[in-house]
Image 1 (tube, one colour):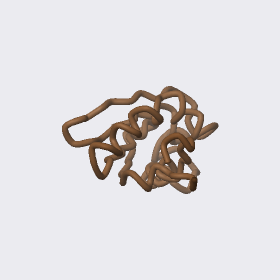
Image 2: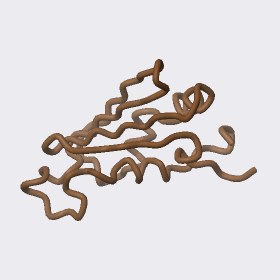
Image 3: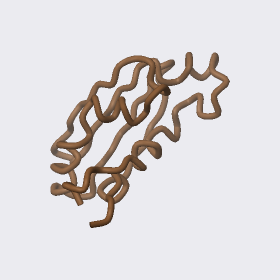
Image 4: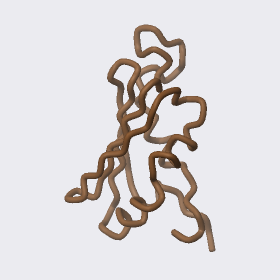
Length: 107
């Protein structure tokens, strides 16, 4: 079995709200949404981002559109006006999550 990534099942978008980043992940279909619902837990997403997210990860489900919104606090090193990080506005944080590998069970 080949390893699947979130990007095989969904697309995304992200942006900043000060030092908080919103990451939206939208599954291509209902089946992908159900798989992602099992694997994109708050803990798994927090672990995936590692030291980039200093605060909490909160997941909101939007099942009618097969989507999730993850709110990452303490994720932008102070936010756009304070951070020296290359992505200080969190515009590519979704791409990082799309690269997350899913367990072989989901393949």
